[in-house]
Structure formats: structure tokens, C-alpha cells
Length: 504
Image (tube, rainbow, N blue to C red):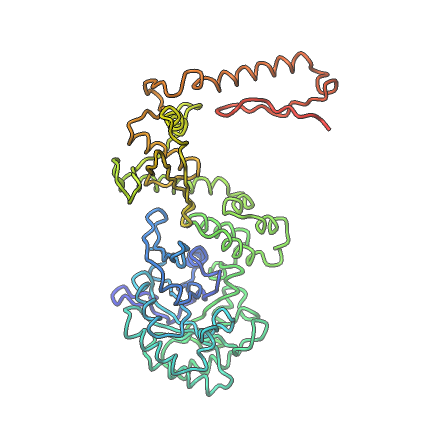
């Protein structure tokens, strides 16, 4: 078994893993890899300094655990589905900071890994990543601190050193720290993916130590299909295999049933991205990696031009799935908010708050709480209500605070739009002050006169009547003789004047 439920420790023997990849190894890709047959999935490398500042937040709407930075960015998101399979990889060069981060995440991950192999500046600056390979004392200090300090397995990922003897010596020293496994990328620090992998180095290392060695680096020419994974394992003599680019291009490489069409895989990936509110730019990046040489196709260009997951969904024809998911998440959000918030005024500093949601169907088409609050303010000879609205980056919801007579009012519930957030704030103010808000069935307060209540509807009906009278009297020569072309008519709750545009 990969995971021993009695010992609660992940095993790294005879597994196939999704390698840690920056911007790729986020939650949607990890879940997709698990669906297709990966035994273990690594998250992207996350820097210890940034993670140490994060707060652990249980996201009840998405049903995830989020590690949120001070600027509200979600640095790491995980869920119960991968709890026993996800390895948290960090970039670090400091034992104490590494332990701080490991203890922050250890209850939500299956293992902790230290990146000692990435040669890019993103990782090597500050002595992290492949820069650690030249400082074995620091490697040992970091790993010993982690092994002694956390309850989950500790692993690391390295690159091979200039000589086979140096590489074996380093891995033997790493083994003595008590780590559970070592992933070995079979390339030198200065080599890049275009260079062939040195299987002989990995094989020699695997024979020199007793802990599992995970072979990495075979995506260029050795691993293209699922059957190639076992061949790579045999060629390196390793206990396990870790895939990066082969999995990034098509994560169904983990499936023993064979590769699926990349179009199918991209749709499944996008569904996870929508379900877990993945950052749109991260979603685009991963989809473009899967598109590869088709990135300049009509679909690729549409994906690149998209700015939101909604727009990406449109490119793949998943608008209905996107909307259904948003409705489900909003319903869950509303239920959680209504259950947890009292329906009575509560002071939050100098702001009076209530758990109020603006439900459009509860008000006549031509009436809103903001209109009532404005009319009341005019009647009392007060300054016009002032609305200040903020957007929450976590789920892009809105919350507004309204100031009336130098007092502030706000709903504790977040809304899906700026307009709805302002209406909710107006409702709080009206209810606290005991002022009618214009709901259907509410007794006429006289705040908004009958002419204003009905004015828009009457104006709409009159305008529509005038238009059709004009149109039918002139038809079929109206456009030709007058130079005026009716473009469209707006009905429903807004202004209902037809757009009459002069032809050029």
C-alpha cells in the first residue's frame, strides 16, 4: 500500500508521482493527476519566507484549507481529496524557518519536501534550490531539524553533482538525517531539459543507499506514455518515478488505460479550476502548456485573451458548468453566512452591522433600498449617502459601507456585485433607523411618491407606444426617407427608450 492507515505515514516505494512544478502543481492539476492514477502529488515550490507569513484558513465555501498571505493571496490550497497524497515542497535555506513552515502545514499534507534541485534564479536566490548542493552542512541542518520537528515524512529533491562519487556521498549523508526518500533529477545543475538524463547516476545512487530513490528527468525522450514509466524505472534502478513535463503536457500519462485526447484532459482540468476557484492566470498557464504547439490555434488565442475563468469556460463551451458551479458556491456561501451571522445590529468599531442580503425579487422593478435612503436623506436635509465598497480577493465578492449623517452602516454578508453590496448596506441603514425600504407588500410610506414609483413604467409604455406608432406609419420607407434606423428596444426594469441612431 502507498499509504499505511495504521502508521499514518506515506510510503515512497514503488510509486509514480507528479513532480513539483512552479505554476503547474496547483490544486486542479494535482487532483487531475490523482484521478488518472498518480500515487503521490507534489505542490509547486513555495518559498518559506512567504509561507511563514500565511494564516491557515478553512474555506467552508470551497471546502478547502487555504494558506492566505497578508495581502489576501492564497499561497497554497489543498483539500481532503488529496490529504493523504500531497507532498508540500518548500524553498528554504534556513532550518528554523523551514520548521516553522513545516509545522504550519503538517496537519494538512502527507509529507514535506525540501527543494534542492531547481537551478532557476527563482529558487537559487538566497541560497535555496540547487544552490544548496554546494553547502552540504546546511542541507544536513535543514533536514535534521525537519525530521525531528514534524510528524509527517520528510523528503528532498536534488540534482546530480559533477562527479558520481560526490553525488553518492551527498545522498548517503542525506540518508543519515532520517529522511524518508530522495528524488534525484538526473541532470547536472547547469543542464536543461534539452539535455539527456543520466540514468547511470540515478542507478548508482539507488544502489548505494537503502531509502527509496525517486527517478526524475525522463520526460524528454524516455517517458511519453504510461508503459514508458516502468521502463524508466528499470533503466534507473530506482524505487519510484516522478514525472514533470510529460504530466504537464498530458496528465493522463499516469493512466494505465493509455493517454486520453488532450482536449478531454483540458476540459477535466478546467472543471477542477472552476470548482476550486483557481486563479485565472494560473488556469491559462496550465492550459497553454497542454496546448503546446496548438497555442496559436483559434482555441489557444481565445484562451490567451481570456481574463477570467468565466471567459476561459466560454472558450471550451463550459459556460453552463461554470454558471451551475457558481450558483452552487453562492448557495453554500449564503447558507453559511445566514447560519453564522445574527439578524440584529452589531457594532464593529464605528460601523453598525447586520447580516443582510439584498434579494432583488423582494422589491418592485422600479424601487430599490438605495432610492428610499436617498429620498429620506433629502427629506431630512442631509448630505447624500456615501458608499465605500471593497472587493475580497479570495472569492471576488463585494462589501459596501454607507455613511449617512456621519454614521456608518454595513452588511456582514458579502455580495456577488458592487451594486448588490451597496443595496445591502442601504438596507442595514434603513432597518436600523426604522425607515421603510420599499419591499413588495410594504405599506406606502410616502417617501417615494406614486409618480416616482410608477414613472418609469409609464414612461416606458408611452415611449414604446410612440415608437411603434412612428415605425408603422413610416414603414416600409422610414429608414430610407428619414435616415433614421430603429436599432433596439430595451424592456424590463430599466429605461425603455428605443435607440434611434442616424445612419452614416
